[in-house]
Length: 176
Image (cartoon, rainbow, N blue to C red; front, side, top):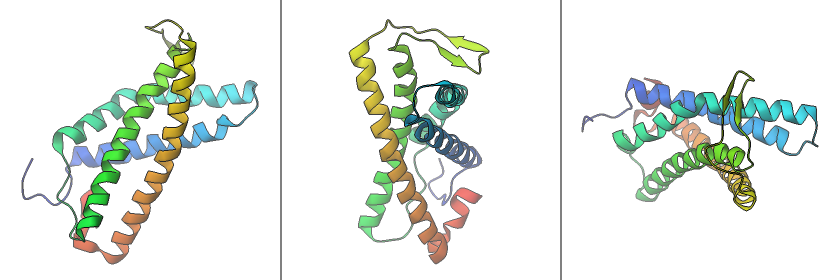
């Protein structure tokens, strides 16, 4: 990692935008089917959510560990409190992604089911059914999803603010 870099490298930018697309898609699908009554339509959207998550799982985990390994670009020139809040939001976003992509598969497996990927691949549960743990994981998954929506909203609003003000050349950090 270069000490004088001001932006993110190509791999980090690709990881960021792909993860953003996947996470926003997953959150949207999850929120959409969550309140639906049981039935074929809910099952369809739930299976789509699970299948996309299963396909993206390795890439998203790579994204989180890549960011941990590579670190962050130097902070944008701004008040110290804003720098700390920015770093906190970025860390919480990564932690939230990690929680979501770990609790998701575990929620399915602790219900005693396999993860079905578009009806083509089946990933059997490596653990037995654990009802109470399953219920707890569902709550963790749902609460984390709602926290992620707030964090993503905050991240997007801060980015828009920086883009409008063009603070310290922020445009180039994630756009290349």
